[in-house]
Length: 429
Image (cartoon, rainbow, N blue to C red; front, side):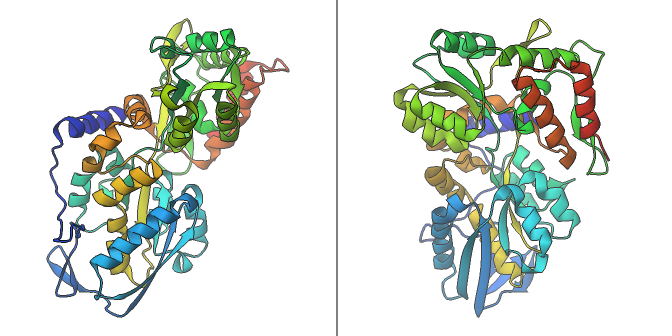
């Protein structure tokens, strides 16, 4: 999937060729591409669906940090459809990472439109919270293949792609590292040691720990039941064994320059000058630029030494999506608003205001997006990324294992036994 992502992305950047297009009104505002209004009715696949012309109350869930952005999008939406309904659009902050938990508690009382992380899609579809997107072919043609895949179950599109930037890569301070230095974790740690500085990564998060196992031939993923996992991270055969990865992690942890910390520790270290590199995502791009200014750098993840060879660090890729509640009282208008929020213009505005990478191919190929070091790094890393499809039992066992590696395995427990315990937890029914 990662290779398809980058090849399509670069093709869009170089050629800006799209199989679909976005219509523009005389005012310069976007009109709907998958659904058009004719005589006050919504036309879908040639079928006219009446739209309410009275009071239309819509609740939208999104990240707290998106409030100003979404309010601007709401304003443009209401201006476009002024006079066709009496809109009351309310924003309510809700984390995208656990949106499904709140929605599933009471679907009928949930938001009409909501932003969510792509790994929640299957659960929402199975619960009947999402309906197939109408005129999906047009939406698919306007967005990156990886984002379309993330918004689909099988070949059916159930949500609108919103961003293509939920992954991780390397931030580094150019004052200390050359382009050659950042190719390997070993050399980076050496530079940091020489300067008595730190390089950070969060090993308490299984999301980041995947970086060490992802390109080794050891596997993890979701079973056909959509709930349980398979995992071979404790493998004892093959060119790279589970214990090889564990030893590699211990070697990194032994460096005085390595600092296992969560996001807050990374950011505070950058700000006080003690941290000169770290693994994170685009959400910290503005903070990195503010702290390091002309020395701000971003790149794909480096390689690391494992089983006497250099292994390219992997990553999970993720996407933010916009869903429409199947139980919405004003489903047709909610669908139009979701499409508006995820449009080319709105995604470009999202990048400008929030620094988030677009999934829309035209927005992604814009000069401003291409000038972003963080987005460029994400593109380079995407070749080595994998769409996150993991069951809930993955997170805690990996976190426990990696946290002990970060501490240096202080009790000297058998690495194979720890790997076996981790895999047993990951694959538990």
